[in-house]
Length: 150
Ligand code: RB5
Image 1: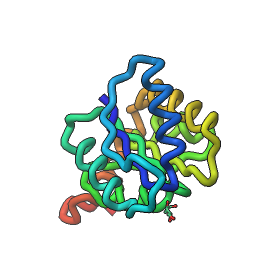
Image 2 (image 1 turned 90 degrees about the vertical axis):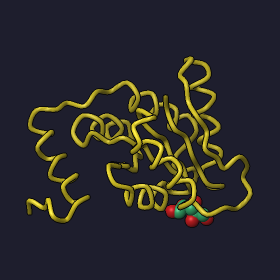
Image 3 (image 1 turned 135 degrees about the vertical axis):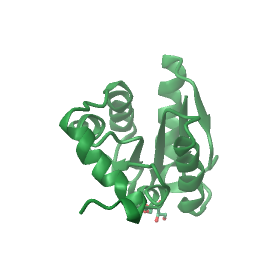
Image 4 (image 1 turned 120 degrees about the horizontal axis):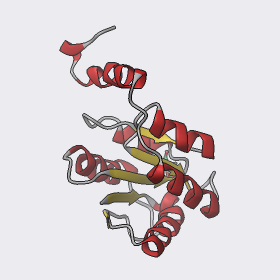
């Protein structure tokens, strides 16, 4: 199950992503917003990030105007690795090497066609593990300052 969210700046992209998920028969929950009326992106970042961090959702997708603000907000939630993606290589590598659990994209910088392409890659690329497990664990350790390794 995939958790989806956006603000008004990413509403076009999340709509295109939902069409792709419907066509592929991939289950999702849309946490809003549900129109292109102006809203505050941290609200939707928090809804999706807490849903993914709870373990009830495998992965999340968040869209705002640039993908940046909504990723910054999502990354405040413990256990979240939200990555802003603007190219196909990044969509693949952030799953393989960073074990990203939320894909973030921007409706004002990425086309709907590319957003669907990046979504397809992100959802179909596994975590590579191995040496990356250690590095991801080092990032995750920052969730708890007492666990710091740097
Ligand atoms: C909203 O105007 C815009 O600031 C937002 O969608 C996003 O791009 C923030 O990073």
